[in-house]
Length: 136
Image 1: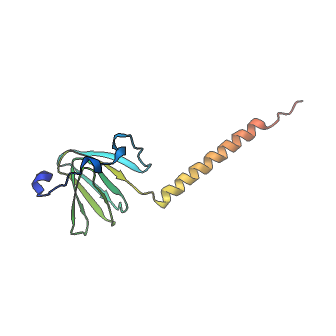
Image 2 (image 1 turned 30 degrees about the horizontal axis):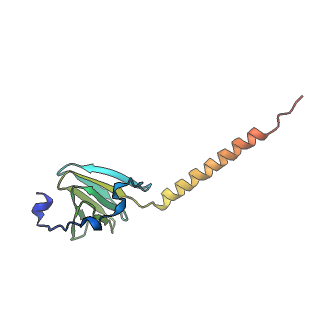
Image 3 (image 1 turned 90 degrees about the horizontal axis):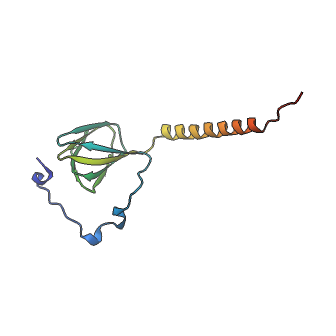
């Protein structure tokens, strides 16, 4: 079964409607991870509320725990996981996609502590270099 056999009618955007920055390399956000799933490949995510799935190529079928919806995404479509629980992603075709994870409070605290430690190390090193050596 492919996306064509799912009975979907996909609208093709006119060339004028496509974004101009598409040809340029776009930097990925820090929490982004690229992934590849072969046809019929499966990826299971647990408790990833707030994560955005962006399809770069192929077709993905997404189903969420305790949710009657089935979401089908094709190229250039995105979906934000809007609930906790298990999320199952199945590739109907060979698919490349990105997972854009929002930072948790614990991750932000870890980054803040790393910066604080780096500043303390830099201050300590610069203080040692300036300290006068006694001459006897």
